[in-house]
Image (cartoon, rainbow, N blue to C red; front, side):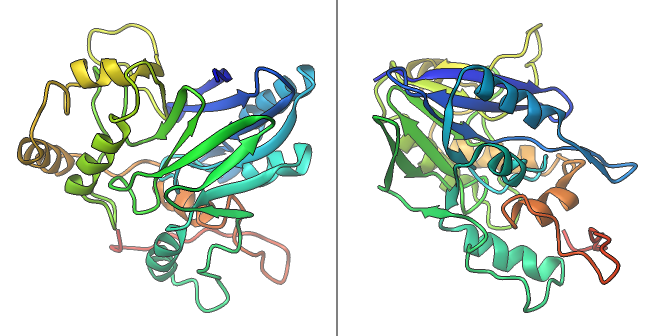
Length: 287
């Protein structure tokens, strides 16, 4: 089956969100939504999420799933806001518990912060499946960028999050806690066993040098032949050396500290204080 896919690009964070629709019905899923956040003022905005909600309403769609490919470090998730407006269940990989344990300590969250993934409605593992109307979605566990990364294969489409980028931009960084370039290579190899004609929808695009426009759709065949990091049969030894050396030169994402605190809670803000005010922490020399 070929799902209908509508992309929403947030240029502030270079993130692509998707509405994935059953072509024979009105059921849909939303993948990797964005809550707008101004780091300087600490203010949130819902314009990106509202654009998705408006599309869903205009098309008369029923949201069955709000899916996260992983705990994002570069943008805040709008999952709970969208769920409040449209319904649907929030899903993520079951290794979220590893991420919650790691960053629960980094942010000194204490025992009141649950580290069992209970903030989400569904925790997926390798081989699980779900349905969007009559469409069946399959779950691949594809860690490496983070321990909890998933790829959702829905019909002839694969939503890979940050594991792969467009062929001219390469692959995801692996230097966050729990990341591994060797593991990422193995995860990519798993994705590339899908049929060559499988459409791949990436989670970000940054315009590779020489390309004027943003892009987010490619295929398994194109990735195998053209990906500058893993294409043309590059060995795991070559990839690990390249990826580790490249990651050592990268700075941290601008929104990593607010993003992790919110996204490990399924998009919810930390609990308010006695006056009803919400605060995000700024750990020093911890990441």
